[in-house]
Length: 114
Image (cartoon, rainbow, N blue to C red):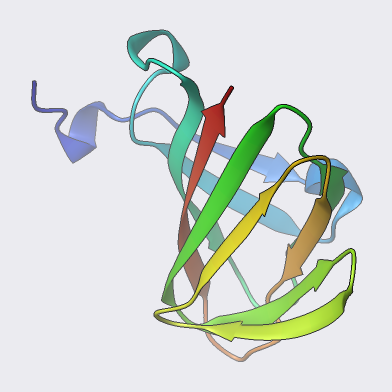
């Protein structure tokens, strides 16, 4: 199967999970088409935008940073992330992400369920 970029659903969420600004989301696959996963999407955050703190129970979320930089807050503190980094959150852990740079922050988010 091939999913064309032009066929991918796009949406914009304001203050996602209590975060700031807007998050543009390009859903790379529909949840009902995936097995053992509930999200595969590219997320785009303008400078100052972010996703608020949220928890992952019985699932693991991967952020693959493809452009820009920002700050991720995990249970054990803040960390700077940049292009090429991968953030892994699961087993009841929480995280948030914010674009603290001057250019867009883009990442692929994949949520694998148990």
